[in-house]
Structure formats: C-alpha cells, structure tokens
Image (tube, rainbow, N blue to C red):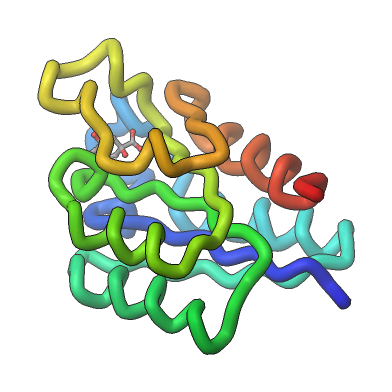
Length: 145
Ligand code: DQA
C-alpha cells in the first residue's frame, strides 16, 4: 500500500512569503506544499497538507488519525510549538511517528522559542534550513521503516 504522509502547519504559516521574509523567506506555503507533493508522488506516496490558525482544528485533525491513520506526520506547529500541551497530547494519543520542522533556527531567536512541547516525542527535529527542512523530513518519512 502507498505510504500516507500528513503535513500539518500551524498558525500564520498561511502567510509564508509575506510574513517577516527576513526570517521566513519568500517561498509561499503553496510552493512548499507543491514541492512536497511532487516528491511524494514520485515516490508513490500520498501526501495531504493541512494548515490552521486554530488550535482546536489542529487537535481535531490529529485526533482523526485514530480512525483514519497515516504512516507519518510532518508538523510545523509554529507558535503552538511553544504553548500547546493540547496538540502535544493529541500526537501522543494517536502515537503516529512525526518530525517537527521549523523554517527558522528557533535556538538563535528569542528565549521563549527555545522550548518546544513536541521535540521529546518526535522522531527528530529540523530547524533553520528554511523550506528545505520539509523536504528533508519527507525523505525520512519515505524511508522510515
Ligand atoms: C516557526 C518558529 C516559531 O517560533 C514561530 O512561532 C513560527 C514559525 C518556524 O517555522 O521557524 O510561527 O515554527
């Protein structure tokens, strides 16, 4: 069966390309998603992307994995990285392997960005590599046993 991958994007990532381009670059979310879809299709995998500015919607999308599982999740929780016990608990509940991605190097930024509620549950975390971070996470998602 084709490998199923879900990519989750947290708040304000819909503004990629227009949002603080000196920090997040000029690539749009649509560009990121197109690149991921191309690579997934070439590998025979299915890839779904979901962005929300709403914590409850992200929690609900993760909870839905209990009844309709995927093989791997790639998530940039954005600001929820630093605040959301609820989204962390949802990922723990569904037990799906995931990689946490951040476009910017959160450790080179304000101290409040240094803590993540996700990293200890994640297979791994990629930060500071811009949109390439998503593609590297996808390579692992495709190769994960
Ligand atoms: C981010 C880093 C977060 O601290 C920030 O709140 C974001 C984006 C990143 O991709 O670098 O919205 O997750």
